[in-house]
Length: 211
Image (tube, rainbow, N blue to C red; front, side):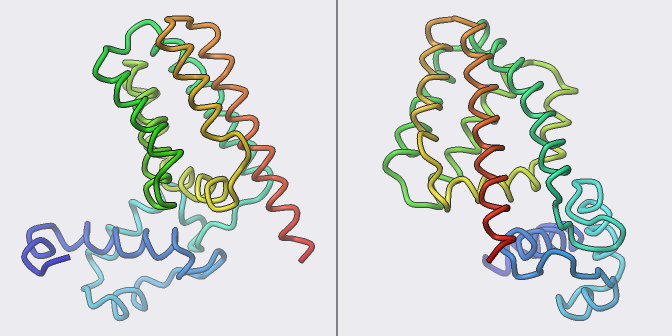
């Protein structure tokens, strides 16, 4: 990032992005105690923008009780239960309301999901789900999912890096139901897709705990 771009944004946002990315990349491990003064010193910011950054990360659920989140099985199940409910509804709405240009973007996400680099697949996966959530037209649903975005990223990384079977095939099935304007099928397929994500993440986390 150029110094000009960096300086054009508030220090609190810069601090937020640096800390968030370090958490998501594993540079700041789960369970790490969050000390405002230490972060300020390490990042070269004053304490005020770091305090504001940490407040945002607490809001997003990446920091709980002054520690970097260490998601439990219950946390994972709770997260996916909310996603299944809200994204299932959003998929049904997408089948009714999503315009042609957005359908084309969904199709592009699937293409990148099959052919892209790991980082491109991550972004395409996020964009696919984002387009569908936006199609709900419900600001409350959009806000809830947006608030969970950083934690969702942690689990999306698990399914992409560990190459969950049929991940993109399921996206294509959801897409086909949406372009067929079959709301009930789109809803059910999304719910099944997210349940498969949950089962896969639980399997990976369970395997890791025995290593």
